[in-house]
Amino acid sequence: MTDLIRCSWAKNPLAVAYHDDEWGVPVYDDKKHFEFLILEAAQAGLSWDTVLKKREGYREAFCDFDVASVSKMAEAKVLEKNIERLMQNPGIIRNRLKINAAISNALPFMAIQEEFGSFSNYIWRFVEGKPIVNGWRDVSQLPATSPESVALSKDLKKRGFRFVGPTVMYAHMQATGLVNDHLLSCFRYQ
Image 1 (spheres, rainbow, N blue to C red):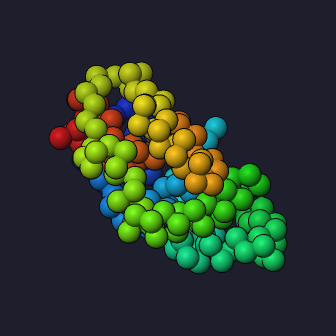
Image 2: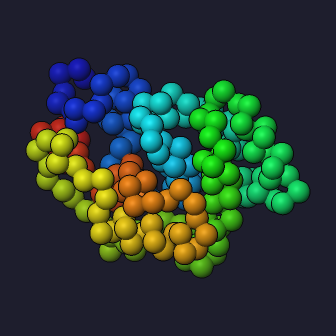
Image 3: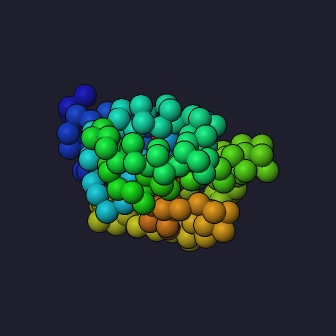
């Protein structure tokens, strides 16, 4: 598989596996959306490679990304204790604001599930139910945001989410296949 042409950012074995198997694949599973909301927020200001290396640590720290279990971590009487415990966990990125957001976003996530039947139903509305397929020739052409990610970010913030700015949401849309930003030369483009 080393002779395949990939997007230029996939440079190490973890990134190659992620690129080849996950990035840009349409996601309709709420658990996977919740996972990427946590991971993309954790990545803000850091490299994606850093997050990929800590992905299993996140899986363990955040109840295998089970939103109902994480929501229990947000209860007022245990929230601060959970944040302090996670701040000591070397398996994740130890940033208090990001940890707090990962926990507190569980409640509005569940509210969206209740309102729309699933988070997937909600988020796919921002791309009219089908992936946006771009046709970039060079990684330098990839945008940091889009009108759709700006609208999604604004709506999520209105619903009480944190660490969901337009850039974070564009990365989420790329990761979960709402946007196909594989380069035209990449074997995964099609």
